Image 1: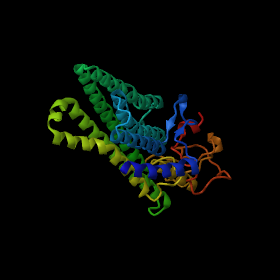
Image 2: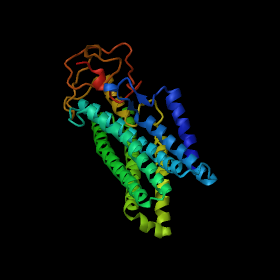
Image 3: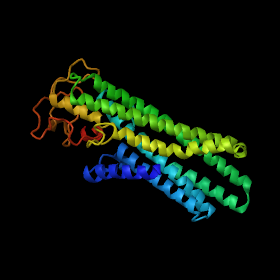
Image 4: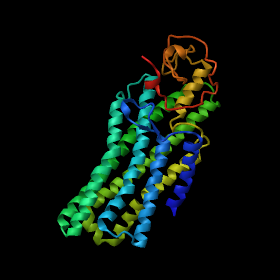
Length: 355
């Protein structure tokens, strides 16, 4: 029931953001070396919808006892969870790029290598589909043949793969998320108007990042723990039906509950449906607003220049971003939006600033 509710709600959100707001799920134009960078919120919702949709189909197959082939059932049961971990990986991918671009703005050395981020996140996207499907299909084949020893080996290996992937992904999200929160707090500290719209945008961004990070990390760690327990004590658990049923309920509803909480965290935020690229999009909006005023203090933490920077001289491609210590001075372009929030994206400095 919850899965169907989620699909309806998120389907509407995706239609609004992708069709109406023209916000793509993957950003090809700003991804160097031909990597397609997923946009955090859009990709999180998209793959979360696929996860819940496949889970709903799997539940229907079990209830109706359709397509009872054991090999297909084993494969199809694992497939939705791989899209679930894919959703959280896409969110990590987006915030990792945000931190990498933003660290250049505040003169810090976090996430220096974009190619390392691209390779690591792409590997995390692909590997679960390869290793876990091999293990699930092999376990089903050997069980069908009656070779229970090899079937158990592949089943236990599958559980440990899930434990490894979920724990590593949760650790990466904490690592990147905490640094993104620090960047947002840095921008919040540099605001001179405590009641301004920029402050509210940054606070909304902080709230959304905290919520989504907490939900994703908790969900991944719970799933990792349950799978590890099954990998170690599977035979003993099968002999204790009550405890086995309790753990099965936890892992069954873990992903669905996390999906619903992510949607709730977006809906209860006033600016959640504004045309921003992601939950971290407020970071650039705050920079643009400060740039439009042209009045940053000399003693701010990031050491930003007090003067107004000329976009044309810095080789920008039609976007306004905050550049530290620019030696150029000039007037605003005629089409500069004083609100500083139009077409906000994830601070694409690596592509927009020409050497």
